[in-house]
Amino acid sequence: MTMLRWLLLGLLIFGLGTGFKNGWLQVDWRRLLEDAGLDLGDPEQPMQLHDNPLLRPPAPPAPPEG
Image (tube, rainbow, N blue to C red; front, side, top):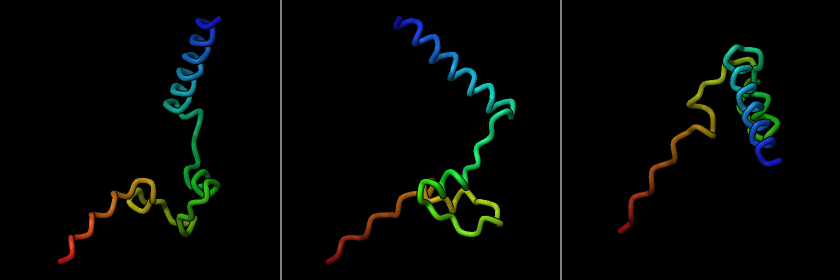
């Protein structure tokens, strides 16, 4: 029974990978992020990756005082 689960999981991952590669499946990232509660600004403007809060580099640490 366990082998059958691994086989089905492998086929699912293979099918999703093939679907994304061939363009059969598409992800609307703006809608997905808005549904997750992240406001990305004007929906008419193309989304720039550096504006995405998930992909922004972390802020540098503050210099020590004193």
